[in-house]
Image (cartoon, rainbow, N blue to C red; front, side, top):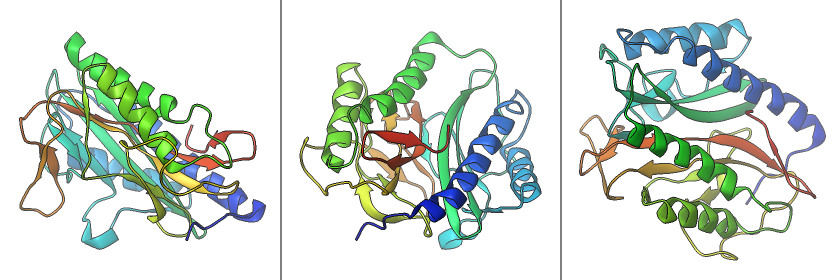
Length: 247
């Protein structure tokens, strides 16, 4: 069942989403050659706490950190550690903030130093695929409308979408109904009504769509070791369109 948010709910949820957005903007200014993912995680934790919120991810299902730090061929759920960012890397940072009973969730992929034009294009297409996905989205649309738009745009540009992991509803819980795949048929899936809040998150691979999960139980990476990018926002469905809560 999709939880429809009241206007009072949304007042609070907007704050959670703004803190999430601001944390990512803050981390973008800190991403550089030589910093470790553990240092980025500490910066994120301190910032979220300073805003009167709590990290949504820390302890969620046993996840040991505030943010997910996924480098190069890691698609999502990379665990912060002593890994040092190097010139030419890309890093996807996924972040969530919990404020007064509601969650916000968003992700961005950042470049480290000098990155090749091919990889920059991957990041750009991944971000654009999110905005393709929300075109025409409003109350009465179907989840499959988002899925199909993302998949069509990504594949038209020569990339592949990950199928093992999907977007999701969000609100009082980090993950709520419905699941929001980045692939599928227009007009399929559940109908979205005004007041629904969902996290749409294209995960796009430069090479093949196949992924593997590492022994830590979290880290997901491409099987062919090609780069992957991730872009996510929490959005509110309205009668006339969408409100992107994490922008």
